[in-house]
Image (cartoon, rainbow, N blue to C red):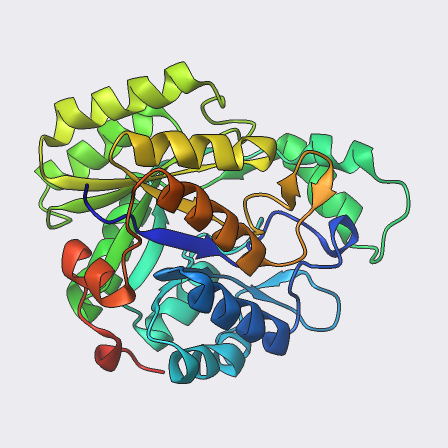
Length: 308
């Protein structure tokens, strides 16, 4: 069996501070959580930034630079910076930190979509910060923009100019076809790295049949010129990750994607989720990829060629 790459998404731009005390907010918390996740077995760390005053997502490169060097100094994990940012950020804001830091890898959503979080707001009545409830309820009338022009621009600015490779986030079958079109245009260099995403309202549902269909579609479109990983939101995180690995794929966990470690039980850290999926995979006979093995598989430029 090939070794499995574990990605850990440390904080994201979906969950809000009220939902879990374990969600890292400050640069110090993000750095500590990322380092612990790498020590637990994550080869790739997917990173967003939060305003340390109230935990809202921020695109500010200065905040990223408060934790990126600390993580790099403490671990050899691949650092993957978001180009999705947070809700209502412009494309320019979303690119500010990646363009300054020139990371080995960035996430890249492969299409515009309804990105709906408003049902989450119904679960809470008391909020830590006043921004949280309107942030969530506002997604009832929100489109997450990722046009072909945006994708091409990100490819040229980060891929061509900085040698950054991408985690191509595909929330639905159409996003796979979008990526195939982009490859036809010469915008990306195969093999590409797909992140198949399930369970976000506005994207494809968290049904195992959909996982099989997405994988078959990727095989049809990309042949052998791709690597793939799976993440699923909330309660579907561990079952989908396990199934993906059994099918020859890689996995993503982390508090960005799910706040839980088991039924009705909040995770205490990102590392706890990494250790759980690592234990499952090793029990199934899989080996876990090191950061350098992930770099070799995905064709990354190396941690010595970033700007932080």
